[in-house]
Amino acid sequence: MRWPALILAAFGALALWLWGFGGADQVTRYASAAQRDVQNAMAAALRGLRAGEPGALATLWGLCFAYGFVHAAGPGHGKLVIGGYGAGTRVPARRLAGLALGASLAQALTAVLLVYAAVFVFGWGREQMTGVADDVLAPLSYALIGAVGLWLMLRGLRHLRSKHDHAHAGDSDVCASCGHAHGPTMEQAETVRSWRDAMVVIGTIAVRPCTGALFLLILTWRLGIDWAGIIGAFVMGLGTASITVMVAFAAVGLRESALQLVQHGAVARTLAWAEILAGAIVVLLASQLVLRSI
View 1 (cartoon, rainbow, N blue to C red):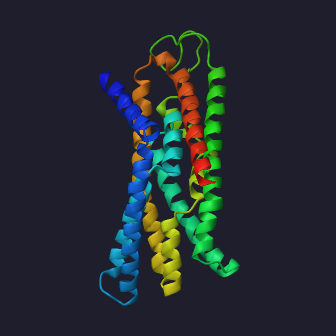
View 2 (cartoon, rainbow, N blue to C red):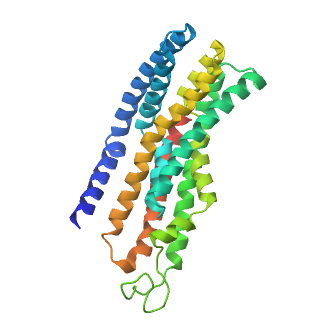
View 3 (cartoon, rainbow, N blue to C red):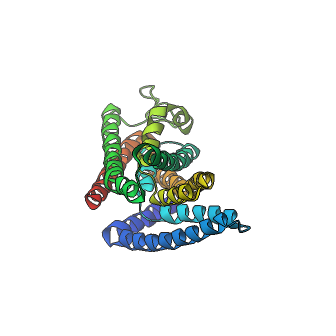
């Protein structure tokens, strides 16, 4: 039982460094510098692709994956939603990882739709597209994240009020005293999470496209190699997903480790409090992101 406590302590120390001692800002600065370097390399690969250089396409898509990975490495809204939802809701690890992957690919789709709608319908250029992404969609995305946090808090409070006041009796999932199950098993959790939850998680992340994907799509459109940019945007989404999927497994591991520290009869109440706490953290961090973006 010692290792769950060590995992909790490690995650607590990481969170304290990130948001209490400016670690998030340091990581953001490093990630931004790395993104600029990768963008420059992508531009060179595009020129090589346009000139028919061998291997330029593979280089471009490799850089797209690297950009998505570096972009996701900084503190961001995708990891916040996936981590908060996974920590506060007993969703299985594979399903949460699927949500993380779906959200990253949906974010790439948003970038494609925004660029081609802007080009063919509104006649916008790069500055106007990135302006909409940064000045409108970013604050909107952060506000929606805060709404997800509030939703988790309210759901946790509702679950907390619905719990029985007496302790769980017996060793099985069904209480020997009242005949009710005081909390969901992992088998039940496989079926109780709705498509509504999935759409909320994916939509909250996907509403703001990656600026790197916008950069790539605009350049490939101007060079007349749209297909390379569209595929590259989704490859970039896979790079982003490589980080968010890891966050998903970490969140589930943290949640299940914490549940091992409580008695069987207290699992349901602990899950309700975890939902409330995760929601409160998401609201707090989303509020900081909103203030930084306006």
